Length: 566
Image (tube, rainbow, N blue to C red; front, side, top):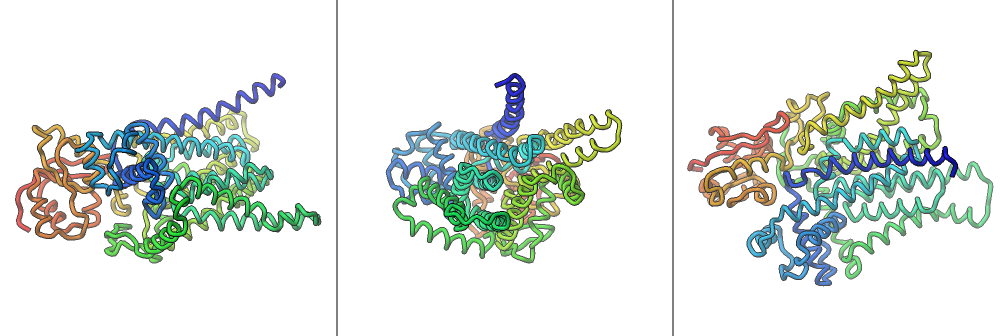
């Protein structure tokens, strides 16, 4: 290796190190600060998954139709790190309530410790996947656009928030991103290993969440477009060419994905037909029925929890609220740059990448819009692709400025402008740390207007309510009723916690239980959705002892309970 190549290789390592650190650090810090409402569910499912592995009860590794297998593997790693004895402890297959009781009362292991360990492995997985995706992006769109794109991804507040919890959506998003970029790289350079990596990532995506199967029509269409192009450019009729025309790449890609799906899910080893049938039936029912409780969106409450096609604009609108000004401005620059053919939009591999990304976003958006159950986090797989397009837009704008007949100072300033862009993306992440979910786009009205449109809160703030009550005298003996009691509140509270019934009304016994508590923690979810009605009436007529505000929004109210007749 000559001296120039030596230093060039060293310089290539520096951006990679920066990408690794910027993905890892903001996600791994303060993992014990708060819990989201679904995490205690995935922790208990991980426990059942781990226990089933230990008992060689492979059929019981089917825990949920999502199916969430990759998340449960991360949870299993958390148990191996903090409580490996669980696999033979005689706990059995437990529901979340019994699992929590077993840990806290029988074996005296704080669930939050295992959750933090599981989150650590989740962050590790995200870092690994995104670094691989960055390397593919670098090959497809070049060093500078890919570097900027993955800095935008690394500090995207919504992506940050979801990629540090024991859940599905961020894993789904990053695996689909890697699968797409690896497949595009295969189309661009015809390296078989890229096709295999794309299939592996797709297989793990299918193991994570059922919307991952939407990658299949995207890959199929891209392969068809490539086949038509190859046919127009070549008159070859050799055996290998005919094999290619018979979709050998698609067959190999799908086969690799299926192998991963089967190998890494033991339930498929012993009961594959029943497992797949249960998934298909359950996904269909869930997609059609919507959410089980009323849902707030855009100033309205859907009482049946179904945001069907009447809310076709749900995902575009929530994206505007969850995205950043930097990304949106970059997308606008990308549209202009593409139309006016600014560099790098003239490069073939960039055009191919744009085609793949846009096709994926369109197919995925249509697929999840048809489902009645809608949450802003379901659209996360589109965020990183949009970040890549945004980065291309910013680089194209800088290239255009640098080609103008301008002073050298202005041309240098264009590069400094990219640094400012990165800083502007980092700033919201710093301001909202570690409660990244509290970020809302200031261009849309920010935290002041968000409660009028968006369903606010996914557990953040309830932890602060628990810590406030922990400072009370004799806190260990207090009885507190809380929304999201199990996990979100109980993991942080010293005393006794009771769950506030999630239904729209309370029966007499539930109301008596509420009134017999020392305190109640009421969450923003409740007064936005206006249920349960007796509790909403209660908080309307009483002054809270303490309120929890984060990033300019009220998240929780703490009431000293006084007996009030129903």
